[in-house]
Image (cartoon, rainbow, N blue to C red; front, side, top):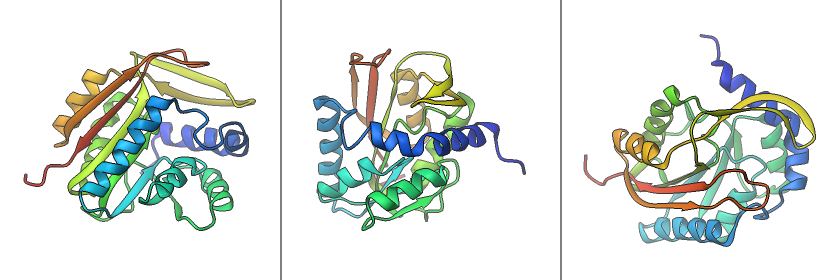
Length: 217
């Protein structure tokens, strides 16, 4: 079966920008104090639930994988772009990174204590979102936690230039209420929502949703 076009476009885009993205967005330079607090809360929830492996899904150059590791989380990264994975492995050689798609993860059922999807769902067409969230539910252990970050709005933006390169892919703006409904339909319980105003070069509000997989069906 041919690969969906949005996956091919996303992979090609991030392969092109990988090195410059890593250089221009080091560490947590793109995150606000509020963003950092949400990431810290996610790490603490994973610890409180007993710990275990956490996947940074759509990890890019590995900056948030490394941040979670610094918070004591047993984190590894997965990314669609082989060039992003190469940059991550070069930058953080002691951490684990692998290629993979959030639409079909090479992770066993119930294997994860936590999953982070920090702006990695934004290239997923709305009709494909239930498939992605079902995959997140599948790989989480009962009681496992999920943190999803995204831009708030409706519709899509076509990206033709990013980090100084000509690219071609779509990014979708998402409603927190709609995302919460979709997560609930996938069997995930939303425990907290954050919506903050745009900062710096951001053009829209930003959202983060924390959810967990119930311990009982």
